[in-house]
Image 1: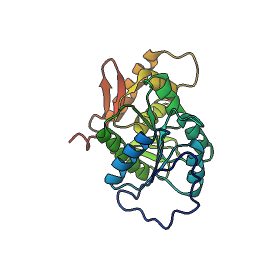
Image 2 (image 1 turned 120 degrees about the horizontal axis):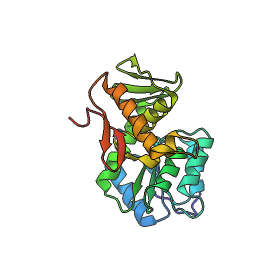
Image 3 (image 1 turned 60 degrees about the vertical axis):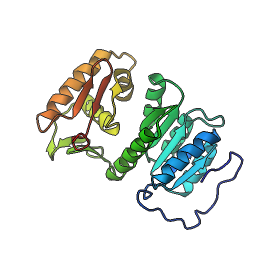
Image 4 (image 1 turned 30 degrees about the vertical axis):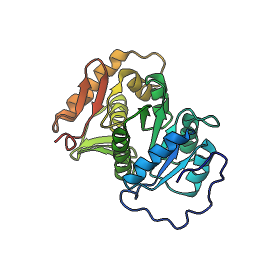
Length: 248
């Protein structure tokens, strides 16, 4: 369903039931009606139950009333940017994954979105098959993250216990290494640049990209000692962690 910017949100969902894969209802924010319509149609064809709105305040209102498995937020919305909406969602304890749609380049904006609690970003114009693949990954991952445990294959980060394991065996990681592994798993299936990793893992301003290479090397060694390789280097770009099941 697509809502105009001045249309008030419904107070009830009219008893709608979500069917697979719409066990994961999606809320889309974009002030361009053409993009809302295209994204909504693509997701509905894939079986998702979709709400689409044109204003950021509508996202916040609906999110307080109904559980969503994913928010797809355009960054450049006049009344409230996608970044601001994401920040408000996280402040209110709504932790469903967020994917940003943006006409901007990556780099600082992408890193800002991730630091605010976002999970992925897709640059416009985008291919609908890529959009659907990312939505599938985020909704499936969200279902596997209940209990504050992030997973990629047999590698997991237990956020409550502050420990990482592979195949049930604890990994001897420093706090920085643990944060880096957490950042990689939260963004599994994609490459993060060194700048993005710096923004996600290190809090201080005195940061050297060479630190990323060193810490990734240590994390890779410790993870790979207990199983097949998963941490990937994209020369000249950055690093990521990839499921071996997805590459079979």
